[in-house]
Image (cartoon, rainbow, N blue to C red; front, side, top):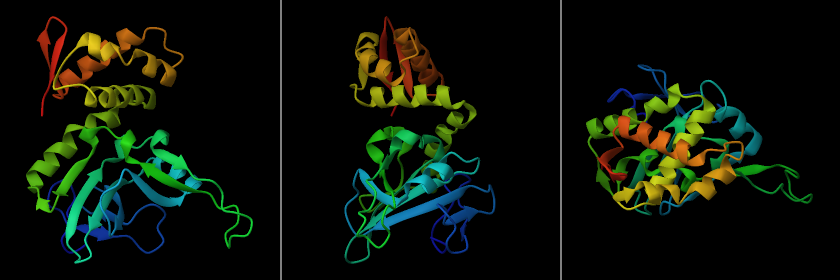
Length: 227
C-alpha cells in the first residue's frame, strides 16, 4: 500500500503508514488527512468481513476522524483479485454486526468481536480500484469517491434516510416508477418508526439523488438510474 497505493480522495498522493497498533487505522494521506483501514485476505470477496473488537469499532466509526475502509482480496499466487474502498460516510452502526462473546473457556473469555456487513452498503459506496483483476484509472476512482462526499454534510438522521433510499433504489430496475419506490414504504417505516409520512420522505430523498446525479427524473413519476 505504501509503495503502490494512493489516496482515492485527492487522487495520486501516496499513503503513509501509521505506527503499529493504531486502533482501526493503517494509513493516512499527507495531502488531505484522510485515514484508511485495510482489510485483506486470500479469498474471494465476501459480503461479511470479520473484524476486531465490537466496542472499539463502534467508537472509531462514530468519532470525528473515523477511517475509510479498504478491502483487498488476493489469490494463492499473490495476485490482487479485488481492491475496493468504502468511504467512511457509508459506515453506520447497522453495518457493524456484534458477534457473541467468546466462551468462558477461551483465552480471551468474554471478548466481543464484530463483522462488517457489506450488504448494508449501497452500490455507489463500493469504489473499486481493482475489480476482477482489472485496474481502474485513478481519475475514475477519485470521481466516484467524490460523488458521495455530500453525505458528510448531512446530519446522521438525514444521512441515514439517504443511505436507506439508496439501498432501495439499488433493488429496482434501471428505469423505475415512483410507485415501485413506494413499495419499500413498510421496510422504511420499520427503520424510521417516528416518521409518519414515509412516502413524502421517499420523494424527498429521490430529489436528493436526482440533484446529486444518481438518478434522472423522466416525468410522470418515472425515474432512470445514471450509471
